[in-house]
Image (cartoon, rainbow, N blue to C red):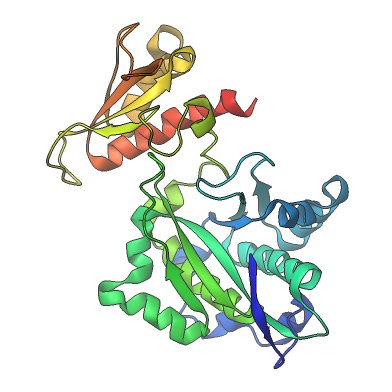
Length: 315
């Protein structure tokens, strides 16, 4: 979260926002989705994360109690790829999520940015799967334009970062006052809830720790991700991608008697092949893990493999 300067029209505190009429009143009914559990992720600096956790976890516990949502943070050494910022995930029912986000952003503004009651314009960087960004943009950019007009917030979507193989998330940057940000986040979240794939992708606040365990990082020929076929189609069953997994972590991917790899293959729908011992990605000690199937099947398999390796990296 970063400041954008100040204006002096209204109070930026959480209490001030709660005194206003709810911006959600003008939304169309969402009865089909309001009772579904979903999530939202965004980035915080290490200092901001410490403020939200509070002494002995007191603040994060209070926010969870007041909102009814669950609030989780990546660890202090786990940064979103390409940044030095941690990931915070708020999950639960839509209304509860919005209450928690309002509490979090309000505290950050009061503690780090607000001065003398001025209304501060700041940035919030939401983490959204690349596959869900199209719904936010809309045909010809119509949806994102309507969100900007409705909320009066600035909304920009970062380009896909190809510097980090296996990263399937983009940043949706929301700029404005607290009230403007909350309205924009609300509109975005309701749109995301309509995306079944988004709801199903709720896994962990931080699925990127695997970059450490797998020597993943900026492309330098180590632990890379390689597309094997020349022509790709989203539903084409012949897509193929190879990733490098550290030799000492291959056992996690295989599982006892091959149980893990069979489960990953069955759940994702991808065919998975691991190279023989001693057959490494060129210039590394990483074994080759090749996944074949539709792009969605490959993404699911890759994510499941990441989580297996991340469980050891986090320990």
